[in-house]
Amino acid sequence: MSSIGTRKVGREFEALAGDLPHHDIHALNQVESELKEKIYSLFIPDKLFDLFDVSRDNFCNRNGERVIKFIAPKRAGFAIIEFRESPEDRDCIFFLELADTPFFKLEITFLIVNDPRSPRFGIDIDSSGRRTKFGTARRNIPEEIRAMEAGLAPGQVRHGLRLLEDFLPGTLQCLSVMGQDMLVAEPLTYHDAIIFERYGFNYVHGKKTMEEINGGFKPKGGLYLKLDGSSPFRQPGAEKTVRGRSWAIHDGILGEPWKGVEMYRAVNREADVCTFPGSVY
Image (cartoon, helix red, strand yellow):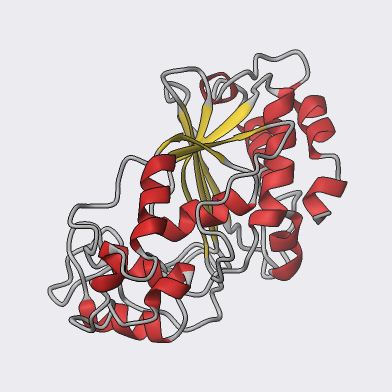
């Protein structure tokens, strides 16, 4: 079990929130600032504080610089947590955006975990300096090739820290205290969906799409036949790995943008869903 899970984060959340309304993000955003930050800090895994020598008490690094920023406006139904190694760093180590949904659930709208000491790949900016929205609006092909060859997946500017197993137990504990029964997430890439499956997520929408993709990548399937070497992202053999498939999908092999997949993780139980049996990342 992860460190954040063994800390009984839910109990800490309950002790901090007390009798205050805390059933959703909008309610939490009404709390006094210092207390609100303490509550939202519980969504950050202990491992990050330990790895980068940051204090949970004042959110400062070893140099006394505050490196965690909380954005949670009172009128908003979202909250953002930004955790950097140093305040001036371009990339967050940990970036989390949580939001209320129209159906009174909580959603991870964005989660990024970067290893700040690993090489950086400029897939987020094109040759003209315009933001690519991680390759969804426009692309920086040379940087994407470099990232792929270094073992990264689409959308990654650096290697990650493999912290989902540390993040998820504590987050689910917090949601349970809030009276929530599930966590909603929209995977931004194919590989995100497969990773979520491995951590007990099920599908709200898109399971059939995922199964069709798996069928398409089987020998003689429509997607398999498109792995013809016509681009660096469509090499024969890419169908064998989650990352290989994800790069091909990012490259447009589906014939349409990646969209329409939404997932959820029940707070008290794991789903048993696998749309890519025997997959290797």
